[in-house]
Image (tube, rainbow, N blue to C red; front, side, top):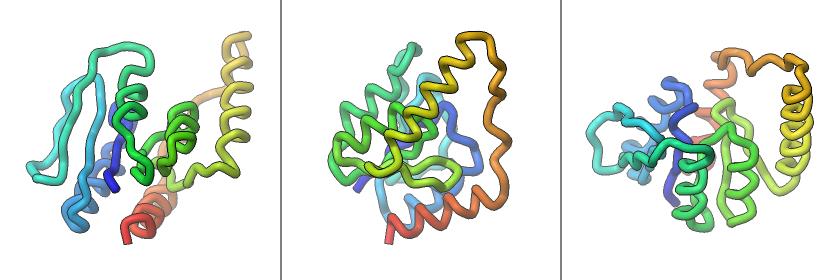
Length: 145
């Protein structure tokens, strides 16, 4: 299993957890972004910088992903594509996406997007909480054991 990270929007605190986990478990971690990112030197951490553009990083992850790989993302359409391809998807807030919940999440996301496009201010997600950070770390540990 490799871990792919939709790294442009991934909170730093989550990336730090991923860096430690990759080294501890000797699991390959691939950060995909459309701008250069800082990461600690490690044979288990690589970075792939893609050109800027809508869904370019997402498309690269889906293209390279193998069944059983883990993707860290809050992007619902990307999580749906990952699951469809046999991968696992974990939200930076600690929620596992699955075949049983991804279509509902996608429907809610699409509805919210329609509201925003019609002028309704739906607000953004709240700042990540300490509990969510711990939930993420716990979920990641279960997947890596």
